[in-house]
Amino acid sequence: MRNVLRRGMAAVLLFLLAHAGFAADEFPGRKKYYDVPIYQLKQLYENRDRVVIVDARSPFEFSTLSIKGAINIPYTDSDFIERVRKLRTNSNRPIVFYCNGRTCFKSYKAARKAMHRGISDVYAYDAGVFEWAQAYPAEAVLLGETPIDPSHIISGADFKKRLLTPLEFTRRIEKLAARDKSMVIDVRDLRQRAAVGLFPRHEYWAALEEMNKLLSLVRKARREGKTLFIYDAVGKQVRWVQYRLQREGVNNYYFMKGGARAYYKDIIIGRED
Image (tube, one colour):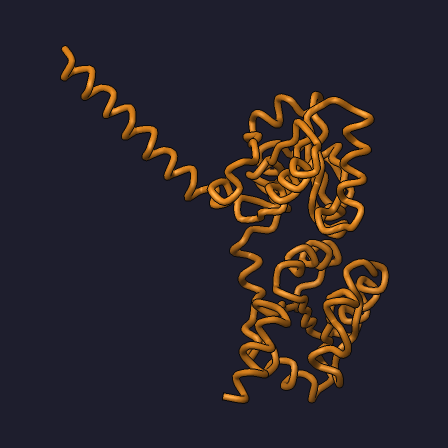
């Protein structure tokens, strides 16, 4: 009898260990941010009216795709803690942070930062906004509209089709520029840009916060039949620009894989080797 019990306990232990490893693989941030309590997808949906949902991403990301009813408090803002404290003062509901998805760690960072500053009952919903929008389109907002059509969510594969390595990005610009058929837009903010862009003879600068300026340039390129080449700091924010391009009916565009950081590494440093 004891042997049977031991074998049963061993089987249960192996099952739990196996599934713990599986969860860690699917949610790589959970191991690093082990002290941050988690809200699962269905759990958040079922409790959405009993919690305060906070989007920890940038205003640009939030304005593109978000959870319906969420509040935007960017994790990187200097007044982040002050604003979260105000939430806690005004409500005793659990505060749940979220960001893009399973490999985006801002939800964990936001929750941990709040916890370390003495703010109680905070959590991270770490499956992210994309999984939420696919599962609950009536509770998501895409470019200001809700409910959303899940088919309008741009897949990772469709995004990757628009990526060019820094070298290919540069070569295509130079080839089309000779016929005045290219427009380059640097969408980095002032701090990231520092001084000048990567293609000073060909490019415009329109930070993501300057949406009207960015859309004006996009429409100009479309009217003039030019191919758009858009880059950011590390190749992540341009994914959100793609939604604006899709809405504007623009088809000829590319993004720089890895952004300006990859350009400096592959082109600038590469030329010195």
